[in-house]
Length: 259
Image 1 (spheres, rainbow, N blue to C red):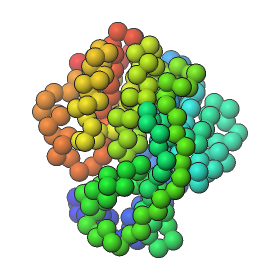
Image 2 (image 1 turned 90 degrees about the vertical axis):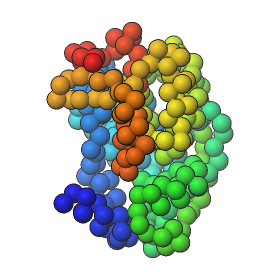
Image 3 (image 1 turned 45 degrees about the horizontal axis):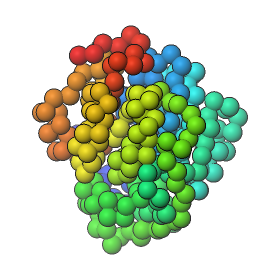
Image 4 (image 1 turned 135 degrees about the vertical axis):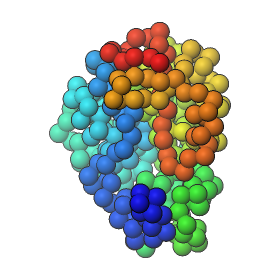
C-alpha cells in the first residue's frame, strides 16, 4: 500500500506540489536521527540547509534547550525563516550556503507558479538526476530557475557547534571540506544525508579524525555501527536517508549505547 501511494505521488505534478506544501506547513519530518539531540545536554547546532524550518522545529521538539544556527542560501526561504522564528532568541538565521568553494547560484524547479524549494540544489545536473530518479515526470515538464546566492566556509564562523546537520542536496562534501578545522578541533556529532556521489569521499575524510558511521535506533537508545552491507543497501535505496558520524572519544552524547 505504501509503495502504491508513493508511486502515485511521484507520478502526479499536483500531488508533488501538495506534498511539499503539506510537509513544510506542518514541519513533517520522518528522520529519526534528529532525535539524537535529546541526548545532548546543551546542543549547539549548525543547521545547514534549513529550508523552511522543518529541522528547527523538530530539534526543538526533542530538546527545548537547543541553540540553533541555521543557514539557508535561498533569500526567499530565508525571509520565511526570519519571520517564522523572529521571537525565538535561541535561533539565529543566516542567508548563506556553507561551502569551501565559492557558490554563486542555486537551482530550483518550478512547476506552474510553484517553486519546489525542497528540491533546490547548487548543482543543476544533480537536481535533474534526482528528479529523474525520484519521479516519473519528464524533466521538460518543469522549469529550472537559477538564483544568485552567497556562501561562506564553516571554518570562518566563530562558533563551535557540537552537532552538525547537513542536508544540502549534493553539496555535502563541500560543506565538510569547509569545516575541517572545526571538525578536527570540536569533533561534533554529524547528521549527514546519504549521497552516493560523495559518500566514500566524506567517509575517507572523517575516518581520519576517528569518526565512525552509525545508524540511530531511538527505541534502543543506541547508535549501531553500519556494516558493508548497510553501505551497499544505501546505494539501492530510492528514499533519502541519513547516517550519523560520531567520534566516541568526545563523549558528547549521554545515555546512548554504542553497538
